Structures are given as structure tokens and as C-alpha cells.
Image 1: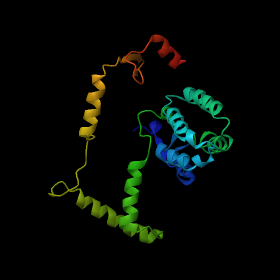
Image 2: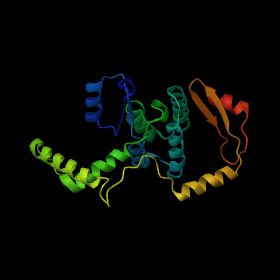
Image 3: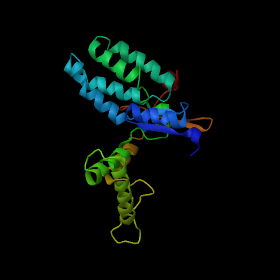
Image 4: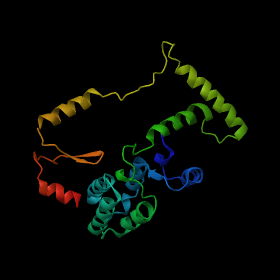
Length: 222
């Protein structure tokens, strides 16, 4: 990957972000892991005075996350804040934690890259559970452990072994996903594609609607 295309996906830890910026500069996007952000927001839903609004608030935040660029994110954020302005305690939390800082959790900040660092976190957990045993090791001891990890993983992934862990070069699609896709195709929804330079944008009617109008597309674009 070209260095200019570098993107950091992290969980908001300042040490990680600061280290990345120091090494690669501040011209690269830093994506806030959507999974971590969502979990943190869910834990603070107790700040919402009306518990019945929890699901709707989270649905709105999920919509914000799908913003395809900063302009749309800023507009939808203003609408969100206006809609829920009566939930002062929650809005204050969301604004200070996820809008004024660490606000790189919307999709359009870095298209075509993962929205979470869950895959890396899964590997991190294996290292903690099986190798460091969740201890803070001194550098000399940690170096020894690292060599042990590399040796073990290399043997586990040796393709000549019968029970080796295979590296997947393409995603495995579960039967349930094929079934969902088949049922969706049967809905016979209209799909409109619009070419914009080297990008193709697809528009699909939401809900039970089958078609989408030019007026609706223009309203979305503006």
C-alpha cells in the first residue's frame, strides 16, 4: 500500500494514535473502531431520561455511522442533536466523547477499509490468554515470548501439516447469508447505479418500497 493511503483503525487509545501520528505524520486518517464506539455509547444510555428512546437513539447513531462523507456526517449530526436536544445529559456525553473528539467513526472517513479492528483484537486476545497470560512483561521477557509466538504460529500454519491452520484468501459465505441474499433478490427491488468518476454509487429503496424516484435520490445527494 502506498504510504499516502495509510489508515489507522484503533479503539481510541491515545497512545496508539499518538504513536501512529509521530511515525507517519498527521496527514493520515485515524478511524475510530465502530464496534468500540458503539459499545461505549450503549453503556452510557442510562443518561437517556426516557428508556423507551434507547433503541431509536441507537438506530439514529447507526445511520450517522453510514455517512459517506464529512459533509453528510456534519449535516446528519446537526439533525440528530436537534432531534434529541431534550436528552441533555446524553447529548453532552456524546458531543464531548464522540463528536468533538474521536469523531472518526463514520464510514465515509475512509471508504473500502474495515470499520472495526475486531480481527486484530481477536489476535491480541489469543496472545494475552495463551502467551503473556495477561501479565505486563518487561521488554527482555516479552522479546522471548514474541520469538516463542512466531515459532508456534509458523508451525501451526505450515501447509505441509495435515492439521495446519489454513490462511483464507477469500471470505467464506455462510448458507444463511446465501439464503438472505436469495430472499432479498426475490423482492425484485429497483437498483439504480450512478457512475461518478471512478466510483459507482448504488441506490436501493428502503423498507417495503420497490422503486426509488429521482427526487428521492436528489434529496439524498443534497
